[in-house]
Length: 108
Image (cartoon, rainbow, N blue to C red; front, side, top):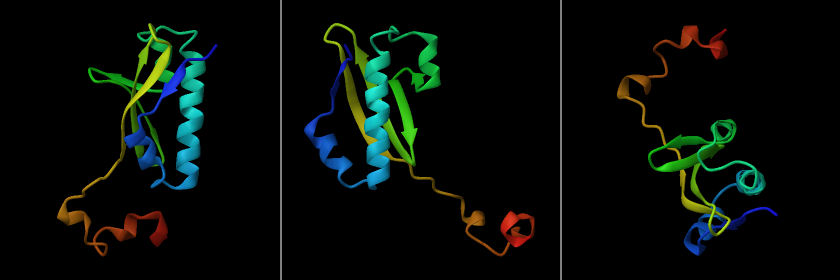
C-alpha cells in the first residue's frame, strides 16, 4: 500500500494559486513518489530519477515550482515541507534585449 501524502493546509491553499496543469502535475508526482516509497528506502540512489537530494531533504521541480518533501518510513508518509515558485533574477546586462539578439534563434 502506498505512503500517505501529508500536505499541510497552508501549503494546500497555495496550490490554488498555481496554474491547473502545474497543480495536477504536482499531485501526480506526489502520488508516484508515495507508490515508490514502499519499494525504495529514503536514501536509495534510485530517488535521483524523481528528485534531487541534499542536506535539506528531497525536492522536485514542476513548471517553475519547487516541492520539497521528506519520506517518513515509520508513519509511511510523504511529508511536503515547502512549496514555492522558482524566480530567477537576471543581472541588468541581460535586460537589454537589443544586445546579443543576433545569436538568438528567434532573430534568425
